[in-house]
Length: 290
Ligand code: EPU
Image (cartoon, protein in one colour):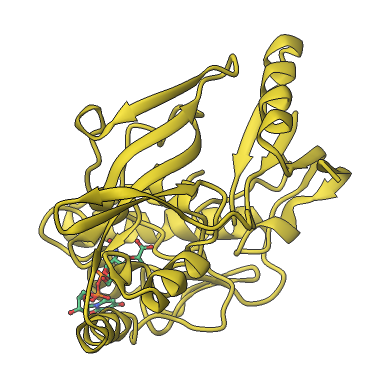
């Protein structure tokens, strides 16, 4: 009812790479008070808490995760209209909502702003933590405020002006900040224009692997370069380690082709990183959370 509890759960089921060991306890709260109680209890007991959304930008280790894993996903709460800001509408959206659902909702409602997220797997909270984006647009650009929960269970509201989002990074990337909800600003837009923008963003992904177990791009782009292009030039496409393979379509994606372990993926990524360092003198930075 209020919270599903899975004990000795394989985390393979809970990330898009389909890897990782076992967690002693996976908790999936359905209400806000339960979520808060879990956080407070973890803090009091000194149990490490790991936040996981749809697991689309994270490498879960083969040793699993100690402590409790909090699954914040599949929140069915629809966006709530808060008001109008000039030409824009402001909505409150819970962090556990799937981006996929959110984007299709916005397109159905004739609201522009989230087209860049078409095809990006993940939850809104996860997208905010990593400031997910495409082609110069990112989720942080559409935020008006965030409601976050501190470790002690206290809820804090952050105004837009206090938030520094940058390329594939947010103030919440490293800290374990739980993003409860976000204010999003969206623009009512004519259907034909909306469809044109959606198509343009969809086209950007034509060189990316489909129907494969991946975690999106593994590395951030260094300023002014495409990491994928550098990896490709360094001969990484198609490299294999155990069950992991560098995508033959786009060199910044690693696919779990046959029951890969997390260490297959990590070692392959490190091998690619070294190749790029040797070939181009550039040290790539991980985008996926390790
Ligand atoms: N390219 C190659 N070989 C490759 C990959 C790319 O030559 O293996 C070339 C392409 O042909 C193109 C250039 O490099 O000329 C740029 O490639 P692409 O358009 O695929 O963009 P990207 O910089 O590699 C970025 C984001 C993607 C996002 C796309 C589309 C990062 C790390 N990557 O990729 O984001 O979907 O643009 O906007 O910022 C992600 O962050 O997980 C992600 C997938």
